[in-house]
Length: 241
Length: 241
Image (tube, rainbow over all chains, first blue to last red; front, side, top):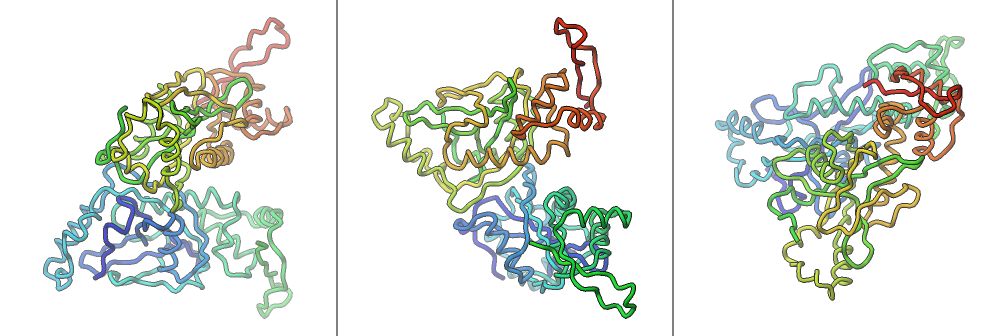
């Protein structure tokens, strides 16, 4: 197993990524599960190389997980409590996996630096879920999209990191018009509304919502979507970048 | 001169603070000037002790500069470009001060760790300027409130850090109702408007502005302010926490 080595990275700083996708009226988050006994889920994470910027590091981590190069991302908060460390989680992981053949692959000394206190820089990313090819790493058993309402319990403070990311996403949605990053290139107005409803976890009144979105003047109206029933076919829209 | 020593702190991470105050219709920022040849201004900054959280570190730095314990502060952005280092500034400082008696106080080895790449966590603070007793450190010549429109050129990316802080302040102002942290306990409606005008650097229409602020339902109306001309005296208000 390849572990990142201490001297390549800025010490005691990590990056945690909340990757949001949207599918079948559900807001989802991409979460890997570790290939060890103990059911450990953890956000896509990584460290910052000495010669790369923090945003660059986040892009590298996100590209490695999604296959997408120009991903929409935002640095939203630093998680820097004094007691923030993965040591208890790693101790538990080792304890539960002592018997396993994987145990041989652990060299305590080699990853001791990772058990120190870590300040984490939180990023969230918005992707068109259809464009993502989720990529699990060597140490992962799986990587899946989970409905944000039924996320597994993750290690450390990762569930709180998702909550904070969602809060920031909500508060930035109108201001920065970023919701369209979660949709495919063309979409109906009903699909925009369902997306907003999934993000805010509440219904919106159809007429008001449509008026509000159209008044933003950021959508181009295209042909009608073919549904079979021509007279009721909704218009398709595209976001004007 | 006392320099912080390497092993007490998280490596390659610093905190930079933008302290906003408001006085005589001007938005101001508290900036120390270093007591060395070369006219160096730098934001109040510091490092994070191993045993303190990032917010705690920011509070310590802010209290040290303002004398205020329960300061309103917000962590707003990380500045993490790969090339972000104070090395050129420190080289220049040493070069310009070689002749000075202070030179003896420098031990290159002792502060070499500070010349590495640093990731900075930006915090901004809002204070009632009348409550602040600006405190200069040993290495400062002065510490002054500067109008944000005529800030001195500071070291590194500190002027951009102020710009980013101002941008975040503007975008949070209505959402979080934080402007009142910049005012004394009681104020007139005109004073609120002048404060908003200073922050946004543009005028607001009086009637609309008053209605918007009163509709927030966060102000308590007190007695009239005594101005000598009783019939024109404006009401005083207080923010309901």
